[in-house]
Image (cartoon, rainbow, N blue to C red; front, side, top):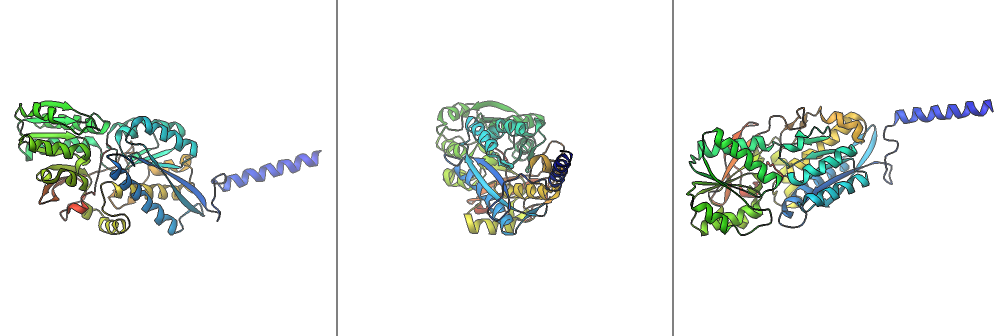
Length: 406
């Protein structure tokens, strides 16, 4: 009996030693023995924002394909990244269902969600499950203000964007009477709130504030009411699916006020939907223009050869995956509990910027760029923070920087 106990003790000790040497021991493996890393991606893949959701998905896919092709290793073992993409329909309730599915499926990281209104409620579920989440497009500051250690964002937030827009409206556009409309989403209302504060801090005057929703298409009643107040500028917090018809209806009603929005309307799709009414519209994007990004030109060529024109956030999605992969390599583990601490130490030479995070998980030194539609193209007006602008951005390259989450 003593001999049996000794053998059992020795076997247990060897087992523990083996576990200590291979932190990925219990991870799923592929047929060729590679560690399987499940990457969750969530965005609206159907409905009026599907063009943005697919853009995000393709940015993630491009990075995954590259990592798999190069034989990426973690802890001396080959890794296979697998994309698991879900349609949250830009609906907070569906987003939480998607988040629970990702938890049940054992994802190692989530890239998303696209919208702030879906990202914030889903983030609670990921936090409780210990899953790392990296936002490439949700800009509402509340996402990283919740104190979740696994929540990160690879672009500027709406405190920075709203401030830039408000100051630009008052000081550069010389607006005296400003009307604000938002779509009551976490993104649209959050950006409008920050814009409102910045306008007032700059000495501007907000004469009326109205709201709609992210499914609306007829804004005649709201715009007629606003027209009666005589604004010289209308600001819209929302996405291109509402911003484009709003711009057209302003023209139809003879509302001659300038039209200003955030990253949600800075898309090729906005110009397509708005038609001639897009001319003169001003919008912002967190980040610098694509051609001014550290590796923007190379990314544009790679992405558009496979997927077509970049809509908005694809470069940020690409960077998000690369940041996670590097953190896993440094940690020697694909498990969130092991590599999460390395995320906070990130210094990544990305497509969009040199990515590093502050204590909340927000991007350090995020830039904001202002654009205006001139001759059917988004033309650069001004960049605040970040790298200097070196070239204007043609309409087909419009998306380059991005922000918010809609």
